[in-house]
Image (cartoon, rainbow, N blue to C red; front, side, top):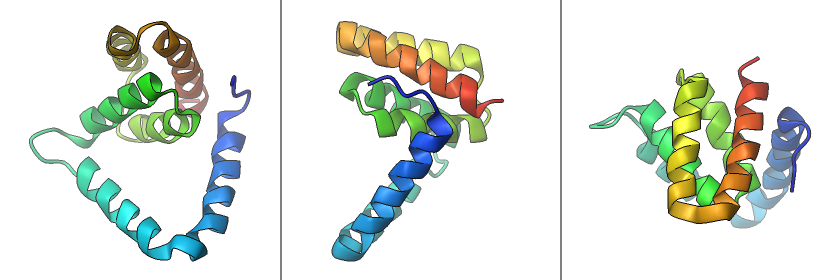
Length: 114
C-alpha cells in the first residue's frame, strides 16, 4: 500500500491502537516496556537501533513499522543518507518486496523530516 500522508497514517494507527489497548492492556503494556528497553541506548545508540527496526519493517513489509520507526529515526537525528543505507541493507536481506517498501520508507522520512 502506498501511504500518501504519513502523519495522518500514524494518527489513524494510533487511534486503532487506542481502541485495542483496553482489551489487551497487559500485552500492550508489556510491548511498550519491551520497545523502550530495546531502543534504550547501550552498546548501540538509539538511532542505530531505530534504523535496524526500520530495516526489519521494510523487509517484513509493515507499513506502520515504516511510519513509527522512520519518525523515531528522525527524532534521534538520522540523516537521509543513513535512511538510504538502511534501505539498501533491507533490500539485500528482503529482495524486491523490500525495494518497494524502501521507497515507502524514504517517502516517510522526507515527510517526517520537514
